[in-house]
Image (cartoon, rainbow, N blue to C red):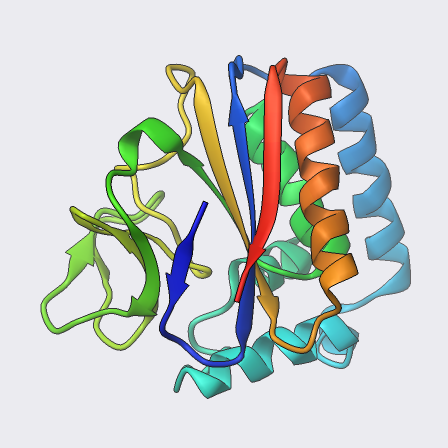
Length: 216
């Protein structure tokens, strides 16, 4: 898997998994999510989150892209704020839940996509004038000047909010996950996050194979 990176300050971890079965999260995955949420809730507050190493690093990455992370929150920070407020994580599916768990563990944005809906070379770039997509849970997401993952058909993902075009549904059989890590992060940490997600996709979503790597 090659993802061309046109934005500064970031390295991308990726996971490709085949033969997945998307469905509700099993009890053990739900327990892992609840346990991590409780740990975070007891150890952090909304105010203290901004001082954690991961949140500061991701906000720094956004600043390099010309983004105000307090106005356009990284998806990881949005999840963490929800968790420390005692609201827990959304329950979406085994695949998306595994990605969200990894995101709050690391503090980095994770994106999970239906690989069959992504066509052609992938690039992480700045959104162009007039580019939009239908965002998950939103009507229209205006992309100009914002970080986007794009394929041959245009933008499909972002470390802020992903599109409905590539969203993971129960019809998905191949998964692509992308982890947006600050450039200064040790490769071993990114590799560990990728391998951990791959293992969870095998355990909780019956993936037959999972491949991982890093793009710089």
